[in-house]
Image (cartoon, rainbow, N blue to C red; front, side):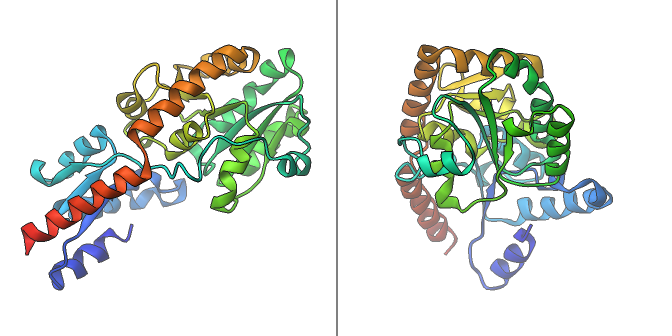
Length: 291
């Protein structure tokens, strides 16, 4: 994190510092840097205690800020924002479908994001044959890259489902909604870990902005914010996850009801324009109070 440098120079030049709390950063260290975790915790504590304001994306990240030493009156809740002019409902992108061998009658499951060890997407690939048994024309597309890409591709080879499992690598940000446009169901199969419990992945809100039904692991950070009946089908286990995805692929009416609810929710609660105005107000108030 570059928060430590920001806090130092902000204090030195009397510039207010606002820290956007979206991740438990020390938990993101890869396995070969785990020995740095205690140092990472201490660095985060300095940042959380020294920043003038902590902008927590969820209530649970606000609780994390308190545990790291932030005073209650320095914590402000500011939801994640989605650019709904970019992430919007659109027709399936025919060029992408042709490029990746997607046929008009194929069912597409979409994952967007970094392929972390805790992303759970490798576990989902292991279960793909269950879906292919009842829906053989299903494709899983992962828009992203990361540490477990080779593992995922090796699993697909071992199961002989390489044609049904596609990893695109990292893509330009402007292309992401075009990829989402070709999806029938979008997924966030995160494993239940300390790093995932308190967060709300932005990808879920982007899926919703594109009016797609979402299946996500039942994590406290996600469910506390989005709640029930707002565009997310929650799954407790990997088996449950696969069943819910298959159900949405088979039941068009159910998929449409869930996607409508998610689209309505994200427009009401996470519109970039509204949240940007809230952020401007918070910045001005903080600046005036500290001047």
